[in-house]
Amino acid sequence: MRFPAAFVAILLLASPLPAIACSVAPGYRVPTNVELVADADLILLATVTDSALAPDAIPEQRITVEPIAAIKGELPAGPLAMPGWIASGAEAMLSNPYELKDAHPQSLAGACNRMSFPRGSRVLFFLKWEGDHWRAAGGPFSRWAEDVLTDDAPWLQVVRLYAEAAALPPGDRTAYLTARRDEYGSERDNPVAQLIATDIDRQLAGPNKPLREDLPPAPDDVDVWTISTKGAEAID
Image (cartoon, rainbow, N blue to C red; front, side):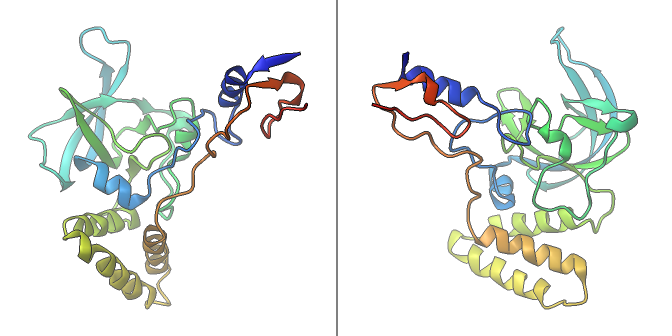
């Protein structure tokens, strides 16, 4: 029995990615930290203060955040509401303060982004302006919202550094990041400095690899029995 190649492609797209709860299109790349900084219209340090239903009967939970400082963009004059909910119990999980590469573990849930926050936590939000509201920047599995409980949190340090780099003329950014990497890397007995140097190195290496590769060109029809988790092949 043979099926059209388009049908096989749909089946492959629908198959789950290993170790994550939601799927993305072939070729999708999680943004690097430098790309995340560049993409955001507003990088906001804010305190999570409340939770309420969205206005106008929108079936969506909202959190309220109280602005503290803007790393990029203009500091809002008052509290903001955005999608999310207040975490409780085992769900009230703070970001690992020494993780600079991967997003909060809750991004691996169904929404592909972190949406649950402990009340009172200080969070660094990356936001895009869309029409008349703010939304999460970066796309699936990005570090769009990570807890930074102290002023010297490593994540806050590197985001400020990348925002400084983004403000430079394009031709000066690589040299700036290279110098800062070497500066942090020279602090051999400072493990946080080493973490930051390693993250800068990741940015200098360029874009992340795709989470899943683009689908290869398919023949006109495919034998359904050859479909597997590794792809599909046509057998003459």
